[in-house]
Image 1 (tube, rainbow, N blue to C red):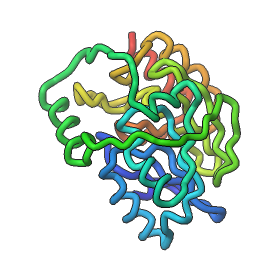
Image 2: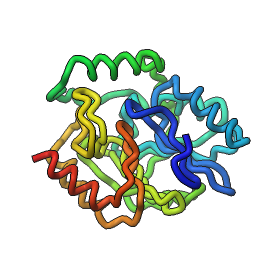
Image 3: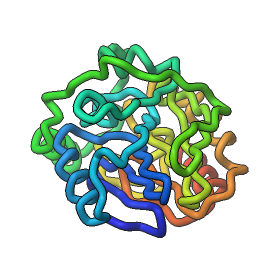
Image 4: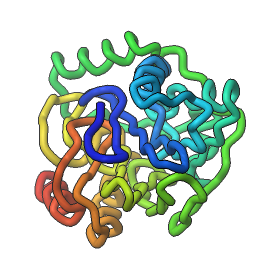
Length: 237
C-alpha cells in the first residue's frame, strides 16, 4: 500500500513492514512474517519492479515477527540483511529473554496469534548471515537510511530515519496498536525487554525531522517524532 511518495507499507495494523522506492533501487525496513513475502511480490509488481531491485533490508530488531522473509530474500536474491550488532544473535538464532505479557484481552490476543499463524509465523527461518550496524551509521542504500539506536525493546533495537521518505521507522520502540489489548494510539509496545529504557530511548527520535512515524504494529502515524514520543510517554505513565 502506498502511503506517500517513495513510501509503501506491507501487511496491516497487526504486523507491518515497509518498502522505500527510489530511482537508485529499493530499501526494505523489516520483513514481517514469512507470509508477507507474497505481499512484497504484489507490491513490487505494482511498481514494475522485482526482488532484484532490492538493495538491502534493514531490521529494526531481531524478533521473529520482523525477520519473516529476510532469510528467503537473502538466500534467493542475495539481498544483504542489516541488523544492530546487539541483536545479531537474536536474528540468527531466536535467542531472547522471556518477558511478561502484561495487560491483554482475549479477542485482540487471539487475533494477533491467529494472524501470525496465517502468515506462517510458526515457520520462522532465522538469518544465516547478517551485516552488523551501529547507531549513527548512514547506510549505503537507497534513501541513505540513518540508524538511531533505541535500546529497550531489545538491546539492538533501532529506529531508521529516511529523509527522502519523510519517515522514521521505529519497529517496536513504540506501537500505535497494542497487539494484546487492541488499544490504539501511540503507546509503549508489549514484549519489551526493558520498558524503562525503552521510554528513555524515545528522546533519541524526538529531534528528527519527519512527518511519518511508522511502527511494526499499528497504524502509520502522521505526526512529528517529538509529538509521538511525548504521546507514548504520557500513555506509559
